Amino acid sequence: MKPLLLALALLQGMAAYAGEVHSNGYTVRFDERIETAPGDLHGATVGRISIVRAADQALAWQENTPLQPGCGAIAAITVLNDSYVALCGHLGGRHYTQKIIFIQGNSPSMVSVDQFDSPSAVRVERDGSLAVDVLRRDRFPAELTGPHYFPTVYRLHRDDATLGFIPSFDADAAERYWQHYRATRQAAPAADVLPELLASLLAAQAGKQSICAELATLAADLQQGQPYDTQGARTLMRKWLHKLPAIGYPAFDTQACPGRI
Image (cartoon, rainbow, N blue to C red):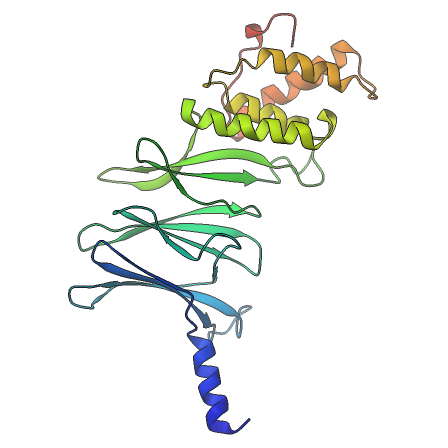
C-alpha cells in the first residue's frame, strides 16, 4: 500500500464511527479509537465518548475509555427517554459495562454499572425509573468453584446530590428475581446451584411468591443422589441463608417456615 493511502487508512481506524444519537439538545457519540498512550492497551481498539451541545456545537463532555463500543445485541448507544442515554461497551468481548448519561441543563452527568460477563439492556420501569439486571460471580471464591451467578436488580437513584445505581429488592424487582430462580432451577440440579437459588429466593421476598414451599422442595431435591438426610439438607440451606445477606441480600426469618427449613 502506498504511504499516503496507508496513512489515511490508519487515521480512519483511529476514529471509527460506532454510534451517535441526538437527545434533548445534545449530540452523543461513542466512537472507536486506537489507544496511542503507552501501557497494556497501546495499539488496541478502545473508545471515546463525546457530548456536544447542539445550540453552539460546544463540547460539553469528552472521555477516553478502555471500553470498546457495543455489547453484542445491545447497541453501543441508545436513547432511553428525554433525560437519559445509555452507552454499552466491553473489554475485548468480556467485562461489559453500561454508562448512563443524564442530559439536563448545561452539565450532563454520567454513572456506570458493571455487568461482568452477562450484558442486559437498561430498561425504563413503569414508574419511569431506570433499572438493569446484573449477574455477579466470584462472590464466595474460597468456597465456590466454577461460575456461580448471583442476580441483583440495580435501580438508578437521582436527587440533587447523587446519581447512582443501588440494589433493589422491592416488589417490582421481585419478579425479575423470581424469573431468574425459575430459569436456574430448570438449568441444573439444586445441589449444583444452591447458593444462587437461595439468593434469588431471598431477593424475591418482597413479591407475592411465598418462598417456604420452594425451600421445602429444594431440601427434598438435595437428598436425591446426595449424601444428605433431611436434617443435613436443611443445615446446608440454613448455612447459605445466613451467609447471603453478607453480600447484600435481604435477611430471612428462619421461623417464617416452621418445619421446612
